[in-house]
Image 1: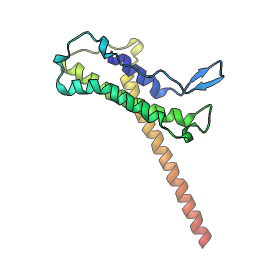
Image 2 (image 1 turned 90 degrees about the vertical axis):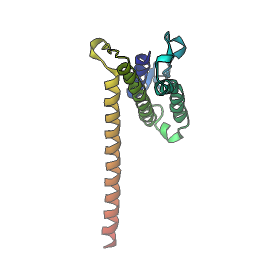
Image 3 (image 1 turned 90 degrees about the horizontal axis):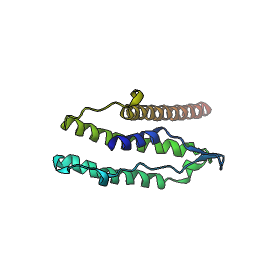
Image 4 (image 1 turned 135 degrees about the horizontal axis):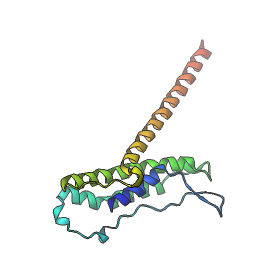
Length: 163
């Protein structure tokens, strides 16, 4: 159940829109990950209070991500219909949310000595999300460095003009 949810978060952490052939461009609508706790057959009494709290907190954290994305200002949609700013912004919260669920899943597996069954073809959404977060952070660092370089150039140019 958590693996499926993690996989949905992983998909959104890389996704940059779904092409709609009728509209002939990418659409910003998407299927949000959904956790069906009511369908779980098992007894929660074996989970300690922290794990139970974190498990039930997945839905509220999901709602926080959805709310954050629904409240973005128009600048994220300036290059419509591509909306590259929006997709870049959407990827990070879903990657972070997926990591939250991954860590909970790993804790549950450790506590109950559950051996994780690898996905077909060796795909591992947990590894993929962690790699994606590294990529996102690296991209942000490069962008920050470029901004600092541009500012330094502007300041240097201004100083040259004063001399």
